Image 1 (spheres, rainbow, N blue to C red):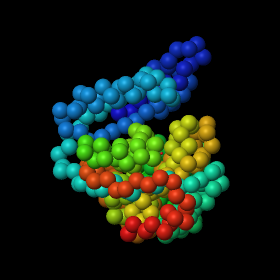
Image 2: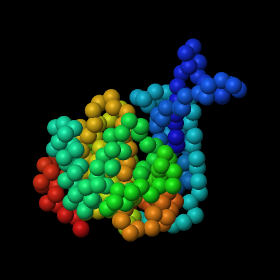
Image 3: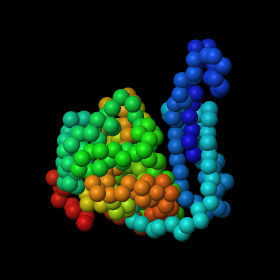
Image 4: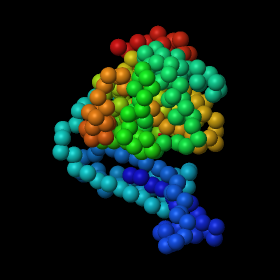
Length: 278
Ligand code: PML
């Protein structure tokens, strides 16, 4: 589901179609997006839930909702969720330090880290994710504006129940956390991807994460200032990887989480770096 809101014109009307010869309308504002893999019996209730979400989102009431339903013909790959922890972090400068430490401990080169920080803290948030070589920092997306859209992932109902219980223990059982963990777990299950950096483009959501098989899913509070429209995702791939199959895996291969790894509460960065999951 993708929901957006056409920016209002001066007279409070919605510009729905370009008037010939007039200036092109401003691009629509992204309101909400969601996806999952469900058995067909659940489709109607999921569609209803997605519509409700799009029209009651804190970012505004969507005036365009696109829902795509696609039959999956390939058997989904079953994976575990990444272990989750929240880093102790008091402000944006500490957040940047934590990002640097986590990415360095995953062998991401300084050059690539700096380029990634430029993307996620840049003025224009990207809609999709950037796929970056972990050594040279070179970007590999054919279309830099679009990036890659991680898709075709979901979580089984038993696993979702288990995850909700784990997150509840730490007071973070929110859809945003669940969905970000599902996406990050799919991303990290791709052998050529080493790590991911994510800063939400939601101006009101100031927790982001660094995720990898090695250090798990590390939530970082205060990763950006409240009200900031910047954000994005950078996926670091091996320097010698062929990006083609990586795009294919991220965008097309169905992956379902059917096992949940432990979720911890707050820990400091040294304790987090001591937990080596690989
Ligand atoms: C998003 O806006 O979808 C990204 C959210 C990232 C952080 C989720 C969390 O709190 O763990």
